[in-house]
Image (cartoon, rainbow over all chains, first blue to last red; front, side, top):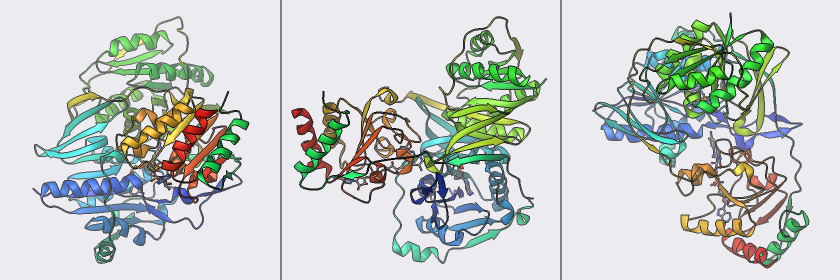
Length: 260
Length: 314
Ligand SMILES: Cc1cc2nc3c(=O)[nH]c(=O)nc-3n(C[C@H](O)[C@H](O)[C@H](O)COP(=O)(O)OP(=O)(O)OC[C@H]3O[C@@H](n4cnc5c(N)ncnc54)[C@H](O)[C@@H]3O)c2cc1C
Ligand SMILES: Nc1ncnc2c1ncn2[C@@H]1O[C@H](COP(=O)(O)O)[C@@H](O)[C@H]1O
């Protein structure tokens, strides 16, 4: 059996590198990287394709601007995706989940070859969990959210999914949209060799016009987006372990959080 | 008449949304509708009616597993019938995946994982974490229909009110292609981390599951509750109920002691309101130290036994 898979990959500002200045997030000069859960989705795609015995894996991303996207998407190609499809259009600036979903759904339709459409359960920066569901609705496909285990079965897909209080096993025919949770797998490390190979893999670029789409305006207005104030003491204790531990525990006793 | 429409597969969560929805409906001059779907819908409907829903759309058709596509279809039908301008869904995992699908059907904007929703100058303003928890975004939806998926327990269940809502039967939507093959309960005990005055958090600095014994001993010596990073729950070393952070508990203990935890933003959002934060980590550049009041740069395998001994000697 041959299984064609599209993995929707978002590149996000590296949350760990975001500095806060006067409670505002500083986003200038922050590196962008492939989302954590999308790496799980890519790993799941590679395993499913192996199980099927063949098929093409495409990494699909939507960006409003450049964001060095050709560089960042190489991470997905180096992990093992065969091709990348980039939808880049300045008209996507300010687009939220509905706009991104419209572009993704149109791109999947244009790609055509897609049995399984994979998403992260949420993107690293937004974590809204909406995009997968919106794309499934636009395509009119069934969806399975929060997959922690995926297998081919009976010509379709069988998934164990992790819900709030239960593990539910669902079966769906193809094509199907699936979002994955982080416990589904440990994404494979990327070797230098594969980074070199990634440079030679095909990359297709489309604009919204190529997809027959107009800009989709934002459906939301951000009133504010501020960090909580943090005022911490930052005391590190030096010395041998016993000295560190003594000073540390004494400090906690003084603070009144341990001891009688 | 335009309505606020409330839905959750969880009875308690639906009641919370009805309580707040009733308040806003009165303030905004809207009606209050609710939807109840699947097995037990009729019973759930009478509870919602008793708490002030004017209309309850009911379908006890076989929504086995509550697949997002059919539930979204049913909810969109109810929203159309009610002329809903605001749809409130509980942001459980089912609710979150439903939110995107139903919003897409309704041409609506949607905010999920809402942890505060307030009516300000006639507008609903939704708070949710952004950038992995680094900031709190306050968002207003600008489409005619607005979908909010609100975290359970954001609002309190209200008192019953006099008067009974009308039950409106909803036609069953087309069946989903998704089929439920099986179901099993999740393992792991229920713990309420939000109630703990002291918390010891353990992370991937622990090299093996058995080593978590050290974490437990430390928690005992501190009379603290044991919690963990998502990574350890993913390994199934500890149950999900012990995760701190964006996808776990948000706590405000007097003391949070992080051991072998790097302190990435998705984790620290669960403890950033602690009165004191302390950390043990081999890496002095670990982000947890940027948030810590007190820290020991060192190997947990040497530091924790010494800490336990010292605490026991107090
Ligand atoms: C959408 C999304 C949601 C998420 N939600 C959550 C969430 O709710 N909660 C959560 O925790 N995470 C969450 N995460 C994951 C989070 O980003 C981090 O991956 C995770 O918190 C890291 O766990 P860790 O600190 O245990 O592991 P690591 O980041 O691997 O850190 C291990 C630390 O241990 C230290 N160490 C190693 N050996 C020793 C030793 N011998 N002694 C002392 N220290 C040692 C290392 O220096 C390192 O700092 C989420 C991620 C995403 C993308
Ligand atoms: N701009 C994008 N390009 C490609 N895929 C995306 C994009 N935004 C979101 N996704 C996919 O949708 C998932 C959920 O995103 P979100 O709704 O933002 O939480 C992500 O894990 C990705 O798989």
